[in-house]
Image (cartoon, rainbow, N blue to C red; front, side, top):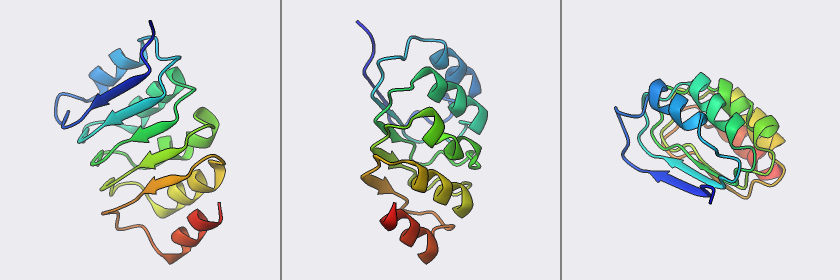
Length: 131
């Protein structure tokens, strides 16, 4: 049996690049839901490796992943084209340009949480509503 859902809430300090590398080496081809709550040490490079290993992801929840800068988020349309839900609550390092690019490219996205993000502005809200 292959893993379809992985939820690690409050994973915090232990979930950094080393843990992400181990996860990306696992068989994630059937993974549909990934939640890494509080993974504040998760980098864009590590998230990209995980996303490459999980191409059929439908839900991605990364609340408080404050180390993310946006590079991995910009790759979401390419790496996870069927993504329906995206939660970036309090991912303050991700900029408005990266968010706008990802949101407009994710054609199946129907749920988006950008609470607690300083870069969210009216222009981005309009892009998200029109996507």
